[in-house]
Image 1 (cartoon, one colour):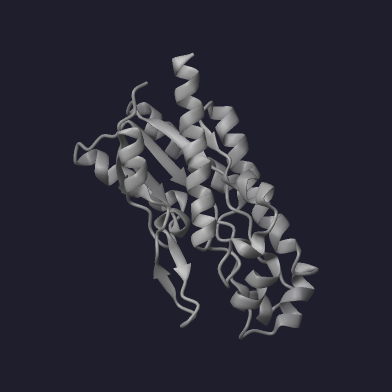
Image 2: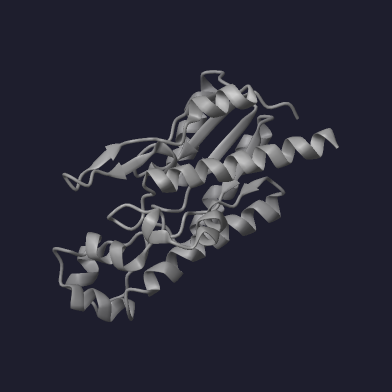
Length: 233
């Protein structure tokens, strides 16, 4: 199908949020060069990504757009990074208790699948992306810096398990793309192939810095070029 109008629904990754190194605060700093994509591939891109968004937020936002009669050819989506997060303060206060992520993997899959099917039902192409990997120690130091870190580590069984937990959500996105037969841009693979995550991530260990954002752009650009080449062939 011919794609010219693209909606982007996602969280702070595609919003382009970074950590300001001088203040330690989150700031909008999107250097993924969306105007370059528009010029190179003849696209009009509406980036409606939001800090803290989940697939449920994306679903509600899309429903609002559809109610207004808006339509795009494709919807690029990035969810899972917020769903996988925990209430770290609650864990620090009760490290022997049972704690759950904001949205469990099965619930995340169900929510995201419904969103994907809504996009399809309205004649638009869903495009998913895998999650950029996080740096577990940076993540732990950032989110638990004012907490009882020893207590959190006892519950985690080691900060390295943060990586494995987040990866489950990226794997869930892969399965959804395969099961729903929709395109998948392997952003995670691009980061892992680079091999030096410390050069690509902000101080919080989870938001890509300018170099990481450039890598995301490269993954999408490679995907579009491969897709165009297949259509030409």
